[in-house]
Each structure stands twice: as structure tokens, then as C-alpha cells.
Length: 369
Image (cartoon, rainbow, N blue to C red; front, side, top):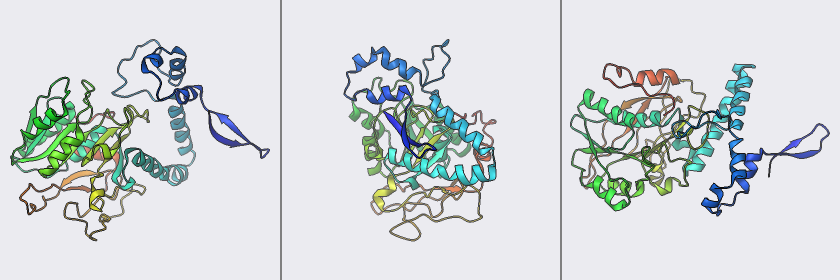
């Protein structure tokens, strides 16, 4: 197995071999018997050599933050060294534009447009952008289960104390073997005041995969958007957005994708079915220009009725509220809008978003989840 062509000074071209662990991974047939492959020590030895983990420790938790393979660490070190050679040139003009290529490949893997993807620092940051961005009134209800991630629960509990919204949690069976039962449990707890649903794609406590697409379809009939916590799902098993059809999706890339620590994903791909983009994520250097952008929309220069009229310019955002759209002719609940203000860097974003959290007893988001 070869990775890339390397041209020597002589002008001849030769192939540089990939690391042995990659050869082993690619040589393992996809249809191989899992039980047999699990006992194949030669295969797992090559995989083991890809990582630089401490052999004196037995780490049973690779879900929170996975060790990056050596090849990822080496790439990060090269980029850091190169950015310090002449930052205004090597970092801003050479390395920084390469983020767009990363975003495009992530979008391809998730099955959506690159304009519908944002690279964040972790799943929690991605989810809190949505959770704190919806304009909820006192008495409005958010529906979720008792097995969702604690930080996402405390984020809504913070809004309960500050704004008077109502967080409704309910138990789901363990194991949850009947998708129809999960949909029923969500549906029977929806009331006229339900404005938002938060659900896990894969529950971190048990590894249970929930029927996201069925819940989304049910909620969409009632005009309720669904935020999906995919922190442990992306790259853990095969799926694309078409398998979910959700409104908002968030994940951490430093878990099962083995990406550099402190990388996450936020996506809002549903707009494809309406012929327009819900958010136009920033594609520039991240520096503010003093102006905002309107979304690209095939149906109207001002966007469509379900999408915000202004979108972020910089690469980091603080969540701010926009009014609810008008109720539909069928009388279904209005769809909330999101808006993000521009002009804050990555550090000030997390500080401004969580201002006052300490007094409310909610810790700011950690760097890795």
C-alpha cells in the first residue's frame, strides 16, 4: 500500500510507503469476521504502533478524548513549526486558507454542503451555539431525555433560571430496542408549548443509538426543530445526514475521527430541501470587516421565511436571539430562528457566551467535550 508519489532531485518519481499500521488497516477485508479479526494479534500490533500512548496504563476511556495517532501529532508539530517561521505569511496566508479544504472534506463525509458546516472546538461548543441561540420565552418547553449529556442539560437549566423556560426530561428504556417506542415517548410529551427537542444520536453512557430520523420526522410534522448531539457518533459508525435529516447536528472530531484535540463540528444541513442555506458560515480569515452578510437563497435575496436574515462574518460567534417566525397557515408552532453576532475571537467567544455562569452554578464548557 502506497501513500503518495515523491519526486527526487534526479527527476525520477518513486513511491513512499505508508506506515505499516495503515497497510494493516487497509488490508483487513471489510467483510472479515469480527471475532476472527479481534483475535488477530498481528493486525492489532500494527494498529497499536500507530499511537504513542503510555504502555504502563490501561486506558478504557477513549471516548472522551481519543489519543491522536502519531501521524496526526507529527502533522500538528510541522504546522506549528512552520507557522512560527513567519506567522503573518506562513500562518495567515498559507496555513489558514487550508481550513476550507478541511471543511469541504468534513462536509463531504457528513453528506452536506461546506457552507452548512462550521469547525468548532468540541461538541459542547457546537451544541451550546444552538441551545443559547434559540429565542425562547418564559414558559416555552424544551424536551429531552434523562440520558442526555450533563453539560447540555445544565445549559438549558441555566436558561430555566435566567429566562423561565421549562426543561422537560423523561426516562427511556435501557436497552432501547424498539425505535417506535422511543418516538412514542417523545411524541406523547409534546405540548403546545414545546419549542425545541434535544436528543442524542449515540448515548455516551450506554452506546445506545437512538432513532434520530424517526424522531425528527415526527417533530417536523409538529413544527419543532431537533438538535442532535452526535458527540460519540461521527466516524464511530457509517452514516450521513441523509440517514438523519436533522435540523442541527454537533460532534467532536477528536473522539472517533482521531482528529487533533480541540476540534468539533456544527452543521445545519436541513435547508437543502428548501433550496437555500440556513447559515453561511465564515470562509475568511476570521477578522471582522464591520459588516454582516445575508444568506444565499435561491428563492429570495432576503432568504426564506424559515431562515435568518443575517449570518456570521467571523469564524466565531456569540449566540443572540431573533424573533420567532409567524405561525404557519396550518396553525403549527412557528419555527425559531437563529442569529449569530460577529466580531469575537475564539477565546472571547467562550467567555462572552458563558458570562455569569459561575454565579448560576454552571461551569463553562471544557475544552474537549
